[in-house]
Image 1 (tube, rainbow over the protein chains, first blue to last red):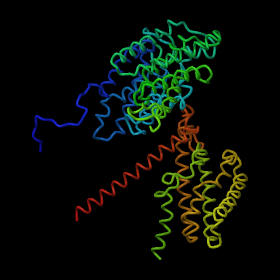
Image 2 (cartoon, helix red, strand yellow):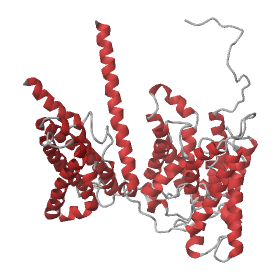
Image 3 (cartoon, rainbow over the protein chains, first blue to last red):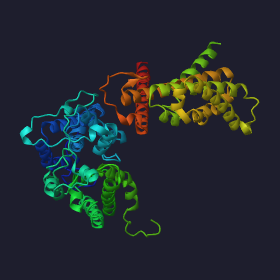
Image 4 (cartoon, rainbow over the protein chains, first blue to last red):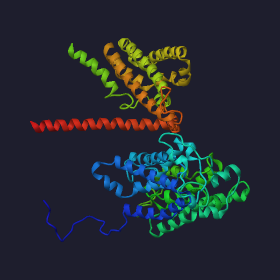
Length: 339
Length: 216
């Protein structure tokens, strides 16, 4: 029985609506990531595309399987699983066996999101949970970097990509250290232009600093991200490494190298800004961002790994509820004493 | 008599499924996480706990009328410790390799809260027959839980089961599975799985009674 349509609609506030929905925001982020993704494919070839697709497939399939049967389409159509899969894929080495990328996508959605109660309930960034799981599970495959093949060899897929499920990968024998690895273990710097344009080895989506910044600018103009977070991360990281650089220019990398190498831009613009896992208050966002920036440089220089963006963001994710609690603005009219 | 037999049966079965010490009561987590990196270790730990639990339940239940209430906990601990010492020396004599791998976790069975819990909650209030049945059930449930964790972790972490290779030499081991985080992860996922099965069963039963009442 259909109720009779009325002219007068009764509804509760809010009455003024924006077009900003989860799906719309996610579409914006996907669009912003497109240039950097294409650059990654340009540099690393078809193998990288397959890694991305497998990671996305793992994420979306897990979301599909563990959603209630009647809301499966809805859950997938807000693009969050797609974005998680893509973000995870962009942080993977291009020669990673495809089955590992698939498991990473499944772990990202399963352990990073669904176990917490689904969208909006998770404490940690799902894509980074997937990456942390992969790094702890397959440490060798996750730290073997292949050199860039360039567009000429686009269709050349490295043998390790096609390893059979659950079997070890056979690497082609050629491997290339990332700029951060070179810096940490051989004290060898990389030219800034190579870092900015993305002409280095590394994860699929992290190499091209310029295009990542371009996407960030788009998100900023669309107001999809809190500008304080990337600004705070990049600023504090630059400041910390500048201080170290001044102290000993031979041993420590300069601030520009620190910003454009590794996954700092990708993490600062696209991962730390995840609205679910970052503080809500402006003051909290600054604390969160400065914490990440300091931790990144601390891990890079004094830690065992050459790169620390992932652990820095995950650590500050864990601190987010606490930060939110201590940066609550004072309610107007209420005294400081009895808050 | 028939009723009595059914009771005994019930006491045994409840430890394995409905009141499983690990998956339902979430007791004895320390050995659960620490020594389940391979199925063999899990089996040895399960067997040791089995012996200690059944032995001390038997003794506590038979002495329950003579143990003063004020010092009951320390008495239980002394009884448990006796059995643990016996187990410790037996394992060291029979399987020194496994004994070495389990290390401190054999003496630590003394403080396994699952065992002390059974003495306090069951053996000290029930007849010897019931207490032994209860202990057998609980110990079997604990063994089942240890084995399911150990099996998953060994298969994924080393590609083996009880030391036999399953996937050939090319298997890529999941390093996390033999490390502590793997224990937590697997235990969490198993808890999730068992509570899912339980909820599903309850829902089915509910639906069944609903249908029956509708039919009437």
